Structure formats: structure tokens, C-alpha cells
Length: 380
Image (cartoon, rainbow, N blue to C red; front, side):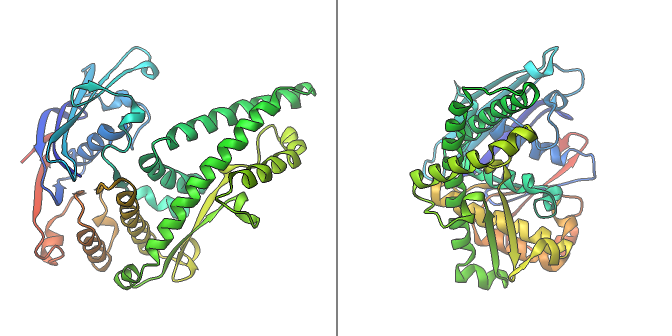
């Protein structure tokens, strides 16, 4: 998969811009506030209709304007035909009701149809929270990959949290009014079914990721043993993770056992919304034994290996989008990252304030670089 060009109209600080990209390294260089990250944000929005910086999408519209337009042109790995994804976002008085319009090759599509068309891996400096933060950060990382490789995963995920929300409201009602709700059981059946299906997908992803991490070539390349351990209530028992009925019966029993506790708490205490992951670097939990630099490099390397996982499922090479990563890594770890990206033959988008540091240290060697100088909403 290769992104060929991106057109922006009234997006952030860009009034009108069309930028053509190279097939390998695309490096956006400029001072802080110049608009480098806005380009990455436009790429991100084009394939998700979301921002990685704000939940209020009105902020993406250029000052005093009422809408923005994005047009992303790309080539599939196997089909040498130029395709396009167009996005129009229109502000309304209530920003929660803003109008979104998505088109693939001039035909309207839904968000669920958009996910996975252009698979990608994204990194920002705050991704260190995947290691240092709580389990929600780690769930977001792996669920985002699952959205891209399994077409129905986003539906299952959204459905799960709708059912969970309804069950929790019923539990609060039971707690406050001290009554029994006869239809709680029907919500429990839905919840159990969704727990099992989401767990099985997460388990499948974790297994294939560890297979790739334990590959001798990757161990030699990274010079470290890297392991990701999935933590789930289902894995605390000796269950067959491929046996739906066995998992269903187990979780049904767990819900029943925890009913009185959940009734007192007013929420559901067990389920995939409590899952977590641990990361091991040379057999030590990196959260407690790793330096800041090692943690950042670890997450970057995990994401690069996840690009292999995406390719295995979709037969498409994902795009790598890295915001301001060079400022967070020393020269040695920067070299490891660049070599890993080259090894995986991916198209990469990076922002940096100082490209000279990379050139002076000959980190790119013979790589073909496409360098875009960004200043005040313009590209030079």
C-alpha cells in the first residue's frame, strides 16, 4: 500500500495544499507549530475520520471556515490503479451532530467500510503510556490493530460496550431500588457471547505477534528477546481458547458467581474490558526494569512487528506514521528503528525539527529521502 498524494482544504492551518509523497521515507521538517503534525493528522483522519489530538473535530476546521475537505490518493499493493478516499466534515451548531461524508472512488461509504482499506501503524511520544499507563492504553493499541484486520471486530467491540453499559445501568437500578430485574439474564447472554468472541480474536492476535517476536531473525536483529503476555480471566483457567462452548460456559459461571458483588458495586467487575498485557524485554517486565529510551524503542519495535501481522492477514503493507520520534531517541536507538523500517519495506511518514542530525550521523545511508520543509501552512 502506498499513499501517493494528499489534498487539504481548510484543514487546521492549511487553506489549500496538495502534497505528493515518495514511496519510502517522507520526512516533514519544520519548527514547532509550523504544521508538520497537521499533515499527519490529516492522514490519520482520512482513514479513521478521527483525530489523535482532540475529540472535538470542529478544531480541525480552519479558523472562520465551516468545513474542511481531504482527498487521499493511494495505490494498492497488487492493483496499479489509483484510488481515492475523500472526507468532508461540516460544522453544525452542536458539534456532536457535525456532518461527515466519506467517499471511496466517488462512492459514499460508511465508517466500518473505511477501516482496513489503508492499514496503518501510528506512533506519538505519548505512546510510552502503553507501557507506563493503565490497561486501557494497552487495550487501545491491540484493539486498533484488530479493527483493521478483522472486518467485524469493530462491530463486536461497539456492541459489547453498549451491552455492558445497559447491564451496568440495570445493576445500579437493582442496587438503588433493591429489586430484581427479570430481563437482566438476556443481557447477560449477549455479554457472554461478545466476551468470548472478542477474547478469541485478542488471543489470536497475541499468539501470532509472539510467533513473530520469537522468530530467530527478529531476535538477532533486535538483539533482545521480546515477549507480549496477554492477561485475561479466560487464561487463568486451563481452557481451550478455540472452544466457544467451553469459554461460554466458563464465563457464564463467572458472571453468576460475581452477581452479588456486581450488584453491590453497581457495575460489571469481570470481562474483556478488564483485560491487560505485560511486555517483557530480555525476560524482564519493561514497565519496571526498562529505561525511558528502552520503553520508547520497545513500543516502536512492537508496532513495526504488528505491521507484519497486518500484512499476513490483509496482504497489504501498512503505512507507518511517526510523530516527532527522533527527539525521543538517542542515535543508537534511532539507527535500530531506521534499519527495522527499511527491513520491512514500508512507506513511512515522520516529523522532525532537525533533519541535519540524522544526515550528519549517516543514519539513512543509501535510503531515498523525500524531505518536505513545512512553514506557516506551506510546503517547500
